[in-house]
Amino acid sequence: MISEGRLHLAIQKSGRLSDFSRGLLRDAGLRIQNGKNDLTARVENFPIDLMFVRDDDIPTFVSDGVCEFGIVGRNVLDEFALGEAEPRFEVVAALGFGRCALKIAAPERLAYEGPQSLEGTRIATSYPCILQDFLDRNGVSATVVKMNGAVELAPRLGIATFICDLVSTGATLEANGLRPVETVLESEAVLIRTRKTLPEDKADLSTRLLSRIDGVLATQESKYIMLNAPEEALDEIAAILPGAESPTIIPLVGRPGHFAVHAVCQESVFWETLQKLKGAGASAILVLPIEKMMM
View 1 (cartoon, rainbow, N blue to C red):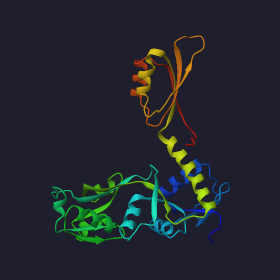
View 2 (tube, helix red, strand yellow; view 1 turned 135 degrees about the vertical axis):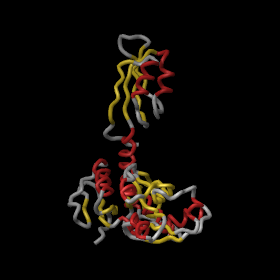
View 3 (cartoon, one colour; view 1 turned 90 degrees about the vertical axis):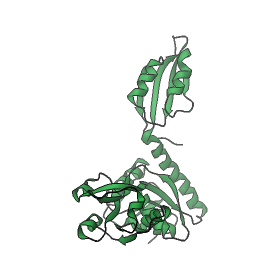
């Protein structure tokens, strides 16, 4: 039964996407009560219930307003959306996990010279709508063969010449004598929400939930940098700091003309960056992880 007065979030019942989704929610400070084998779970410290479902059911749950939010792969979402007259959900955040690509693959020895090589062929896939959209955009006429699994076997069985399937490492393709030749879609997990109008109390809860998740996402690449520098080097150092807006400048006690610089960098900080900072005159450089951030 759907609990009134609480938000509802649909996530994949099992698999890597489920594990990553749970990790995101834990990082947002949500304490999930029940185990992963249950169909639903209650969050102890926030008015939200989780629903564990098949990944291809998540867009339906969110579109119909059964769940206000859902976490789903872009590949599943786009396949669903292309079959709908009007999307009844919106993407609110790309989550940075579950990355993979939907690619067209060909037998190792078959020549491929671009999308026109697909003309008049048969292509097996579990994503017929995305594939057909790709073919239409490239002006290619081909037969789309829908399969629900074991797509990589289609060329060997004579079902199709090409396949269009999700690829992460490419090991499965290689094991079946296939090679990727065309990228149709780059995918990752996304957070979606319903377009249905929410009552005021749920709208407020939604804002609070999104604020927590935004904070988690902001800390994934962000680092806190502290360093010392002479006054004449401050402008150059500020320009080097990756993704930093306005660093905090603090005079150093007992060292006239020298300052401590503190900054939140919202891009990756590499050793090359530290070497550039040192070359500009920075010293005592510290790079620290950020556990929580409220945007």
